[in-house]
Image (tube, rainbow, N blue to C red; front, side, top):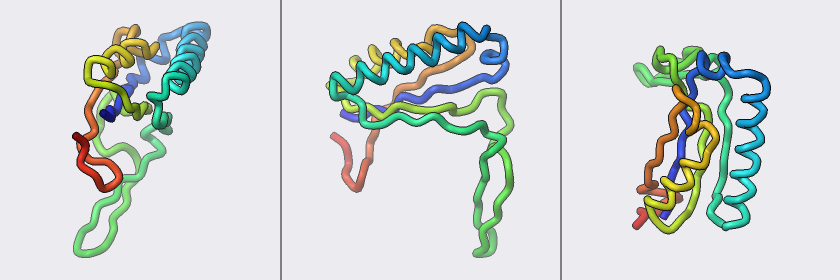
Amino acid sequence: MQFLISMHINPAVLDALTDEERAAIGDGHGRFIEELRESGELITTQALADPSQAAVVSVRNGQPVVTDGPFLEAKEYLGGFYLIDCEDRDRAIELAARIPDAAIEGLGIEVRQVMFAAGQLEA
């Protein structure tokens, strides 16, 4: 079963962390990635740029309209994700709980099963 584990970031929370705390988060992600690679459960992981660098695309009257910045004004944003392939939802939740961000008040980790991938409906 495939699951998307998304990490929701609140910049105010990150800004309040010490340099050592931020370094510990990075080190923790490095260890987590290596563990997922060794277990064969990692498909991919990506960190996303700040929403201020985003472009929002819509089509109006058949023409693309592009605006800068995030789609919604919110204090939290999607900071990155892990796409994993594991036995079941319980294992996905177990893995998500090991992400360093999960232990920081104000940051969120979401686990969602992939329903459709690469042209195939997931079981």
